[in-house]
Length: 175
Image (cartoon, rainbow, N blue to C red; front, side, top):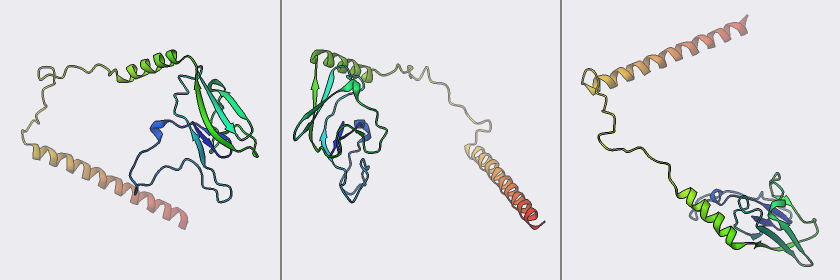
C-alpha cells in the first residue's frame, strides 16, 4: 500500500517492485507532473487480499485521522491510486493496524507452507527415462542437413508467394 501526497492509496504487489543497481532504469509508479508532482509519503507492506478482515489502515493528516478497513479499500482504477482525501487535505503518514494477530500468523504460515510445497515430480531415474531416439541412418550430420534443406525450401516458397502477392497488388493498382 502506497500513500501519495494527494491522499490517494495505490496498491502494488511487492513482486512488481524491481530491485536493481544504480545504472539500471527502474519502473515508474507515478507519472511525472511538473506542477504539484505526485510523491509517496507513506508505505505499508501487508497482504491485503488474504488479511482484509483483520487489517485497518489509518491516514494521518495535520488535523484528523481517516480510518479505512481493508475490506473497504477501493480498487485501483486510477493511474495514481484511489483517492481517499479531499484535494486541500495533505496526508502525513500511513499506518496499518492489525486485529487478531494469532489469526494473521496462522493465515500467513499456511500461505508460506502452500508456496513452499512443490508439486510432485515424476521419479527421474535412468530406468524410468525413455530411451533416446537414434536417427535411422546413424549419421547425425545427415539428419541435420535434411532439416536445414527442408527449412530452406519452405523459406523459398514463402518468398515466392510474397513476390506473387506484390505483383498482384501492382497489377491491380495499374488497372
